[in-house]
Image (cartoon, rainbow, N blue to C red; front, top):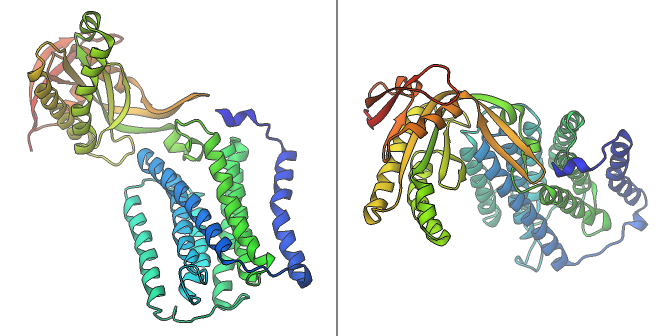
Length: 452
């Protein structure tokens, strides 16, 4: 992994901590010497600075959210929600800039930032814990977006308690009540991430630690600074720096599994009961020898355009890889599909139905054969510089591949473990078959139809 090119030493950590503490030292200096805390009121700069910060946070929320749901990792999901809460409420705060979009100051939009940062601290803290599953992830994200929308409506309509037209320049009871828990939660989250970093050094983890520290300092500056003074501008700069740090860490990672260093242990090397589907084209090599590469590519694309959607969208499979004409799909990789055998079997039949429709117009094209097997497998992160992949490994996977090699063209073959999980399925025995790497023959079945 490219981030391990950096040298991580206790001295480096101490230097990083010193650099991160400079902003808070600057804030103390400005507050103790008001003459240094110069007044600069420039509304367009404020608007675009806040909007840029919200935009960066929104990009991070999208990227981490997609990775979390794809891999079923709760830690990355909570990181995504932390970024999302900051992005949404910061966007609302941008609307509070006087004489840009609103003529008068709006309490709801002004207070949006401390609320968003405080809410983000809760998600940051939760991300530092070990929590399993993300089946509730989409619902929680929708709830957060709904909360932002309600806050915006209440602010525009000036509903109590957001009906004030002015906001105090210094900390009042409400802001302090938000700030103190938020600072503590960010500090705890940063400390726990630092422990993880100490066990397995990573630029991404160090970026997260730095971002949480900067967000905690931003909360301090946000509450105690004076409006339109340097100390007030400081918290805007701190939040921007926090998100830039994470964006830089993301940019340096390899594209494949760029958030892998944030994954929980169970995501990186856990065990699941799952089903694996393999499919390839019988006679592909012969077809390739007799046709131009462009024709072969067009044939493959035509097939994959119709066979992948039924597997992924309709039956919830995860495409692990496509190599040439071969397709590997997993079910229950995230641990959220208890009916994985049924889904895999239904996907296999749907794949063959879609492929048959294509082949009806191209009778000289090779046809798919599908093999499915169920059982325990290791969910692992494999690879190093230039290529990392999140995949499944084990005998279950190997047997699925061997079964696929024995399947008749146009058919779906399943192993005994999958058949046992489909008591209502209609099958036909293909007999005891010798599978490569297996000491004893295994009875393989052709899947004809699924029951209820």
